[in-house]
Amino acid sequence: MMPEQRALVAETFLFRGAGREPLEFALSDPRCAREETAKGAVIYGPRAFRRCLGVVLAGQIQVNKGTLIMSVLEPGDLFGAAALFHQGEDYATTLTARSRCLLLFLPQALVEELMARFPQVGRNYVVYLSGRIRFLAGKVDALTAGNAGQKLAQYLLARASGGWAEPECSAAGLARRLGVSRASLYRAYDALTGAGLIRREGRRVRLLDEAGLRRQLH
Image (cartoon, rainbow, N blue to C red; front, side):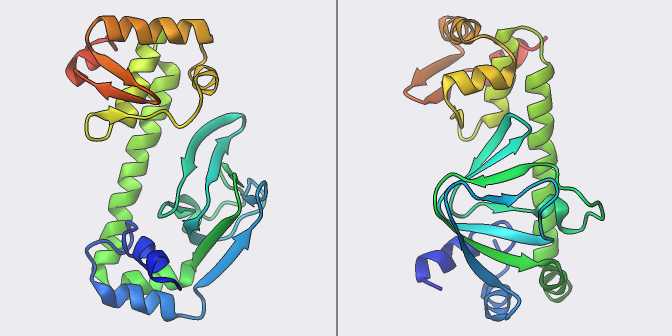
């Protein structure tokens, strides 16, 4: 594995703060596999998935729930955590390669062994799942909020990181996701900007007053 790819894996939630030993143990195990996939290929789907943690080493993966774009995974992102120990026969979302991708797969048995040998890995996994619950709750809130302004405010708060939010899709895609028209979305942006709550800078949105955005929800 190339050094930059090894560094990506080391910075994933699973190995962060756990030292070098768990990483070297995982990458040297023959069950750990790298695979390439072509643009447009379905990596995971409702009826076709594997009980593995996947790591994006190169490329982009689009995550859909039906026609709804949930997120876009970049190099260093993981997928498959929710299904790793799930006993159901279906997978909740569809993962499609937006470009040629290089992926790393850690099967369930290997992850279980990592957790047993290295407690920090187990703690990291629990922390990650807790964060995913919060993320998905924010998605639900965005879809069930009231008017376009409230939906946009909730969406931006759910995407907030370091005072910024960046929609992972176009304005048309965001409008579909929030269940509003493009015109309503633009008016919502204008209203929040006029109220001094946000400032748009290209695709990114600066959250000037997060408390004020939260007040928009009530």
